[in-house]
Length: 399
Length: 118
Image 1: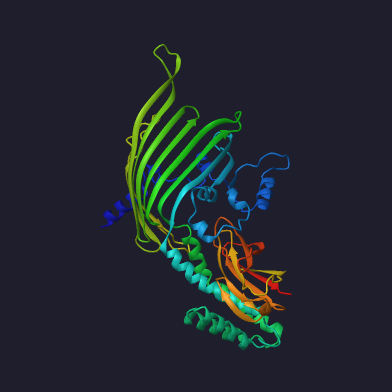
Image 2: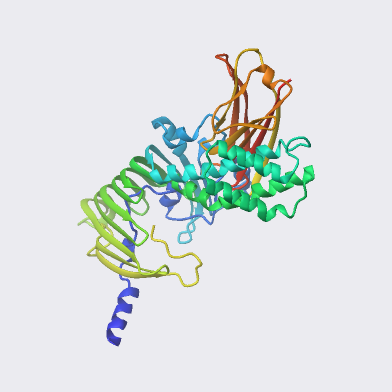
């Protein structure tokens, strides 16, 4: 038994081939500019309005007018200004043009390569043309939140009509709120909760006009705190989509220490079908150009399936790669030449994760990675690992 | 979750004597919220166009429009409302758009628009 445990632990921690661990290589990178550099800047600015964009751009330069290093910028141009005509319905079910505008994001980064000492600059974009449909759970949660915010809007309305003649006591204010809520068929449970909240704070306020308004302000604060979790749920559900999603991204990387020469160019395109927000099929196309010591071009086309769950994740992917690489070499006359190698290779991978408890999960990856013109290896991998969170307050999440 | 209060004051003078005066609200920036409309201290409607009645019913009174928006979008913290007042089939008078940015994601913005009728 002891021997078995030792072997099991060894299998878990002696990992031979780490480059095949990603759950899926079929998705468009979240921030293409960072992805193309293979580097996450230490500071990322994400301005959400024109004023903060201007501030962030000014803060990107040092006192000598040079761009600061290890800095990233991510910006969604459409969202830098207000859109009073954009209703929730249009936001959730936009046409193709509106989907493009809402989803377009641009990213840039400037980092120092610690190995070569060169400064690398990158710029990228990402957008969608189709973004599926909202999930049913959003409709249900939004309706629930609307009931709650209706209560708050009515309390605020009553607060503004408190006067010496009509609503001149806390009780009359609560009665007026209840009457309005009953008119709008708000559920009895919500009204009862409101009355309970009001009763719990009532003793702290008198029936003076100013105090009644303070009492209603406090009641609003209690109600707002009461729907905090629900609002968070609704906000998360806004980004869970089902149906067809079409997304594109591109990025390029430059070596600013070497005449701003282009080092990498990448384009990604994915067409996904979300059976639900947790089950998706995806078709990916990708082009990658690298110009370092050797120049290489990769064209990848792949298919994948991913199923997520609180308890387990499963993903299967296949990606075909057509690559060409120019490799420094010498010919039979001992003259330096550039040998061009063109090949087809593929990656086939399956991964499964299972949550044993809220703190521990096991992961298994099996498959074959791409062959490389630069490294000789079998490409086959099998990795068994354990994820655990001992000190984190947050339980381990698979989704 | 913090709450931001936005107070707004405007005037609306009815143009006709015999047409119903309807008030409605549009919430923008892709956000969702609720609103309630009062004429004086009387609750008229919530989350739907409110019929305030005819000129003689509203003159000298104040319409109070209370709008509650919870910022739910990760892309922006902006919120905005626009109020529309119509009489019969006439062109709507537009108030706003009024804009306010929530300090943090998931904060609540409460607008109070008072329309004085005199």
